[in-house]
Image (cartoon, rainbow, N blue to C red; front, side, top):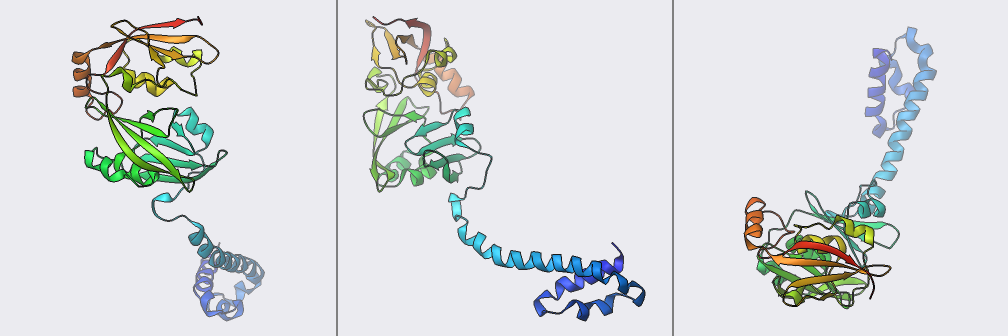
Length: 288
């Protein structure tokens, strides 16, 4: 494009707000020799004007429709399937994901309808106290995302920290949304902390292939959920019922030295907890 044409278009664009016509702008920037190119410039100028008009119409609508604040969701590459592939925690109509931020996705069962992204929460006991009677989505900003689901027979989520305890957040549903009702402190060394005898979603045998000796019970529960019972006599032998029959049987030991070493090397980890149980052996048992 010639320099004179560029100057003309800049002037035309600048004067759109004054409703100046092509004829009013062109003579100042085009020589007589260049006048035959008017048809070309008419076309370009028309395109510029049309674009500006369209943007003037659409921009206010876009701003009004765009969710405000932290609820903005504009990553069209994230789908429910991609979140499943990343091993996110799905609970009711919410999906929890942790990367450089804490994410909560709201779904309608078929697609993502809202997205909340928070800075990672710094653990504080008072944060859990303040979370009561607030929406779970809002509470996540202060207490972070849960480690795994609580019990199948109630609305609850478990938070695991490196102090040897679980915080079980008991929930209620109001107006279709989950609210924090209360927070229960549970000792990780107490086997009763881990059992979910009425567990509704059972793991498949293929999912159990990732369970290995040396894993903490925290890691196991993250992958396949809670066990249903303890069948040991003095020893901790937990059974996880499997989809299609049979059970995964784990012998667990209390390895304080290993736990303390791991926590020392990984101070930011929220998967392990002090004095947690570790997998000593893995066995799959048939029905009966």
